[in-house]
Image (cartoon, rainbow over the protein chains, first blue to last red):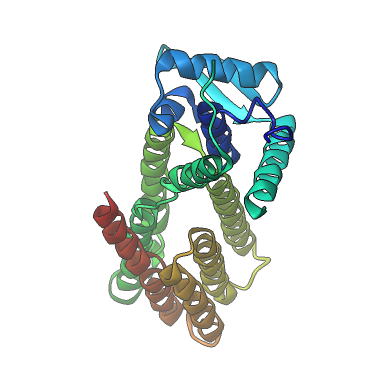
Amino acid sequence: MFKNLDPLLHNQLRLSVMSLLMNVEYAEFSWLLEKTEATRGNLSVQISKLKEAGYIKVKKSFKNNYPLTTCSIGKKGVDAFEKYVEAISGYLKH
Amino acid sequence: MEKQFDEKQSFALITEAVQNARERIMEDGFFYLLWGYLVLAAALSHYVLLELVDPRYAAAPWPILMTMGGIISGISGRKRSKKARMKTFFDTAMMYLWSAFLIALFMVLGFTAAGKIDPLACYPLIIVIYGIGTWVSGGILKFKPLLIGGISCWIIAGVSFYFTFDIQILMLALSILISYIIPGHMLKFKASRNV
C-alpha cells in the first residue's frame, strides 16, 4: 500500500523535521527539539539519517561558547518532500 | 522497528508542522516605535528651532537622534538575532526591504546635500520612502494598518511637494505618526495579546 512513499520520510519524527524545515530558512537543533517534542537522542539520530540521504544540511558551530547545530533543507530534500506530499495526496483522494 | 503511520496521520502532521513553524511570524512593533518616535521628535524640534529659536541650528536634532536610533537598533537587533533560534524567509525579506530603504534614504539626503536634489523635494521624497517601508512590510506581515500607513505616506508626500519647507517638516511628522507610530502601537498591542 505504501509502495510509493519514501520510507525515509514516512516516519513521524523525520516527517515533522522536514515539514518544519520546509517553512524556515534554517533552524537550530533546540528549536526543532521543542517543536517536535522528541527526545534529544532520537532527534539526533533522525537528523543524521536525513543528512546522510542529502535531504538536509547540518552545520555545526558555536554560539556564546556553546556548540550549536543548525539545520536547513536542501534541494534534494525539497524534491523528496514534494514527491511525498504528492503521493499521500494521491492516497487520500482514493 | 520504526513506528509506521497512515496517510491521514501523515497529512495531519505536515499541516501541524506548518502551523507550528508559522508561530514566530509576529512583529512586536519595537523598531516601528523606536524610529517613529525618534523621527517625530527630530521633525518637531526641527520645526520649533526653525520657527522660534535659531534657524542655523534647526537641523541639528536629526544627526543626533538618528545616530541614537542607529545605535539602539544595532544593539537590539544583535540581541534579537542571538535569541532567535530559526530564521524564516520573512526575516530575509524584511532585511532586504530595510536595507534598500536605508540606501534610498541616504541617497536622497546625500544628493540633496550635494545640491543635485531641490531641497524642497527632499522631505517629500523621504516620505515616499517611508511609505515604501510600511507598505512592503505591511504586505509581508499581512498587517492592514501598515498598508494604510504606506498609502497615507504617498498621499502626504504628493501633497507636500506643493508646500513650503516649514510645512513639509510638519507633514513629515504627520506621516511618521500615521505610518509608523500608530501601526507600531497596534503591533505591540497585538503581540502582547498573543503571548
